Length: 304
Image (cartoon, rainbow, N blue to C red; front, side):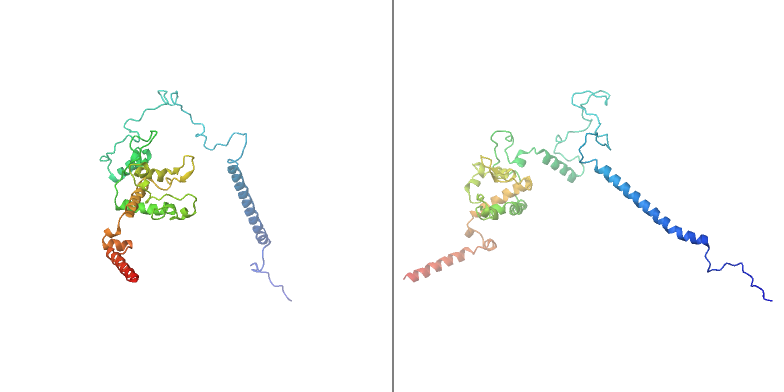
């Protein structure tokens, strides 16, 4: 008689429980749906933020403006000589705090300011802002700035040295040479001069710019033209202002370099030493004399 095999109680590893199958089937769709909802909410919130922020600028409306920092709009406005409840004495005009000094009323003595480099910079910055020195900042005789006929300085109020002249040459080549040429002779020696209907001035050859008895020959006048420009009586511009690019110190440096160019035009190369003449590209004076002598002899021989 055959007997049926007994069923073992151990589960078959190949069998999959229905509950496990349901978990596996439904986990992935739930995750995708959650991510989709999260992304959608993020997009909606971002769009709302852009709309709110974008609507605060550039829109015309009769509605009250949105104020995120209302303290600047609603702060009290204190008018001079008026009363206020903010201060206990009721005065809007306040006196200086004890121990303070108004900017511009300090002396030039920096011995008690500790760091001298820092102190000197403070004084220089103060002077540059106040521009109280009419000679340096405007090229005028002190006290003549507000007069109907300002008086230009005859000589520049800065120390002229090699460093200043070299700085002037650099600035001149950058800002002035395109009109007046690198030699300062104006006319068609500069690029703009060859194309402009009005020839730029000859700064080194025109005696107007060297005669110190006239305004045009004074250092202060040249400084003023560099900084403020030049106009005809009808208002036509002859030269633009360069104060946006050339500060006061550099303007004086350009004037110093112009004086060097003017002096160089009147120097006889034969009076210079051989090394200087060679550096300037001129032949030595002796060779010039010999060449002239040989030419004269040859011509004489030819005539005979």
